[in-house]
Length: 354
Ligand SMILES: *Cc1c(COP(=O)(O)O)cnc(C)c1O
Image (cartoon, rainbow, N blue to C red; front, side):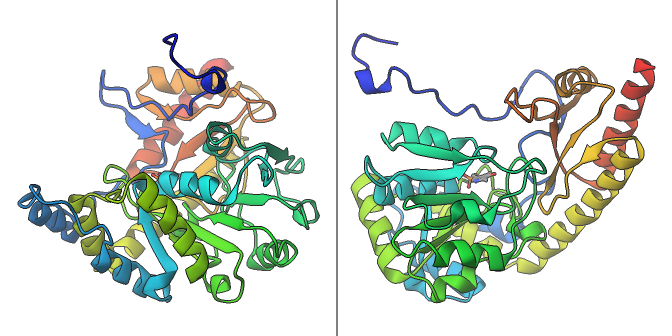
């Protein structure tokens, strides 16, 4: 670092994204991307927009907002979009947290929450998940802080029911509750309908996972108009053109092809159920996942060794060197063909340990 970095940033530890190695072709099961190409309608949008790159995009991204609102069954005024849901989460930290309004989230959850908190000088509390890696709803009642819950959670894949979400939202009327639904399309229950009933609930979703758009960077957020207006205040103070024109029209195109998204999600769910069944047959402890990944551990091999051995054999999974979960691998669900190769390779590795 230079001598000019401000003292507040000296201890900041950046978020570490999953590997995107360029040295050879891997079966990539490490960053929860979709194994399927984006909808052709989305690609058409990119090509159309690319012909007018001399112009700024519509800062209001009106067509996209309307398409998202229609898909979610809410009004346009209830939606804001951004450069990935990561950017929305950062806007939320900027708008609804500060030195006195702390952030609260589970000890095992999306690693970016604590980075956003530190970068925005927001004190935060991590609440321990129970020994089965589940949220204890009581812990989140009247916490007097802004709450962040990924549902289904990452990296566990475990989903919280809507009733529990409602209990948490209801018991924190003076604070914003953020439900990060990056993985909701793979079998979770969305809290979007509750945004009509509660003025303190923010639901964040992304096009990165179920809609095969991780490279385009597009996320959105659903909440009542007042909360959305607060987030627009931040957006227009940071980056009014945060959704570029190619991503804008890609998003509109993808949303006009929900049948494709649904069918891809069904394929993932089928491959996930296969993977869970096979891993359990091999003696793995696999958490019940409602996401496009599974979280698993085996008593005969450490999480780190399995990760490294798989990498040697051309398969990338995610390993977190973190207290409580350092024996686990998080394995993204790819195509059925990829999952069969993964299972066969795991079998080989376990055999070689005998
Ligand atoms: C992937 C992910 C995101 C980030 O999604 P982008 O829209 O690609 O920025 C947010 N939250 C969770 C829990 C995720 O897993």
